[in-house]
Amino acid sequence: MRHGFQKTVADRVEICGVGVHSASPARIVIHPAEADHGVVFLRTGMADGADRLIEARWRNVLQTALCTVIGDRAGASVATIEHLMAALAGLGVDNALIEIDGPETPIMDGSAAQFVTAIDGVGLVTQARRRKYLRVLKSVYVENGRSRAELKPAERGFSVDVEIDFEAATIGRQRRAFDIDPQTFRTEIARARTFGFVADVQKLWAAGFALGSSLENSVALDGERVLNPEGLRYRDEFVRHKALDAIGDLSLAGAPILGAYHAYRPGHALNAAILGALFADKANYEIVDAASRRFVRSAGVAPSRAAAAFAANAD
View 1 (cartoon, helix red, strand yellow):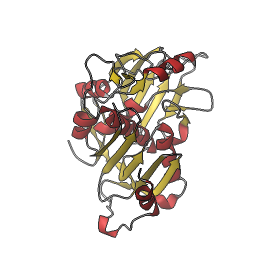
View 2 (cartoon, rainbow, N blue to C red):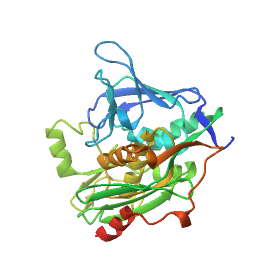
View 3 (spheres, helix red, strand yellow):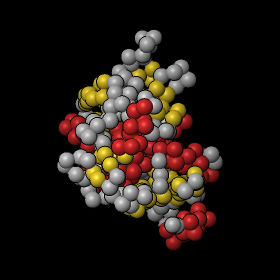
View 4 (cartoon, helix red, strand yellow):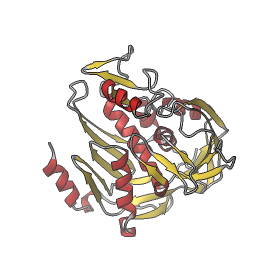
């Protein structure tokens, strides 16, 4: 398989499940797509009978509370896309048409593992067009209360450095950094599940959210206890899942990022905000293809004010 060229799935992939928030059943079919198509959702099953196309792009994000929701002005939307998007980005899928007949992407086991298995089952094909990359030229920084994130130039590739900090000793303060490639994503990130506290879930149920949440698709914490009989998949599964979410959310840039993402206490809103900051100024980035991409040498990148802020604000 040639490196630096666009890829799509070799055959259609069908996955069925229920949404973690809506508890609504949904069937998704990942179809191969032509070069330069990008990732686009085809929302079917609408009340008016009309099918809608929704590009998986940052500008189409409608909501970031609890999950990432994309949609259009006509009222079509797809919720909880982050795990599927992470699987596509992590495996290097550039082009796909994702047909979905419900309002929310199936949660499966709460991770990206089953999406990865399904895609690996059909494999990928290399297309005749070179891959386009989004190269970060200038550091951008956002913060929201105690949460903060920076996206900065990198010598090569895409990396995520994520830190979380919870009062519960079961989680505590965890930090992991990954250079993202398909093998690292499969083995180190994809199996990390979403998580939550029982007390919070009960409040969400009362508000009409997390209706499909269960021990089958979430790591549940009650005080300092993990309620899932099988325990954790990784000792630091919690921070790995936050890295997974970040990969999915940042894939809404529309092209693989050449840059380094560093976040403290991130969530979907923070991930969306960093893309908003990046695209706010065209001087922050450039689009390059695999043949012409140039990497910023680390010795030539001056420490940014954002990096200084991270150091100064470290708890």
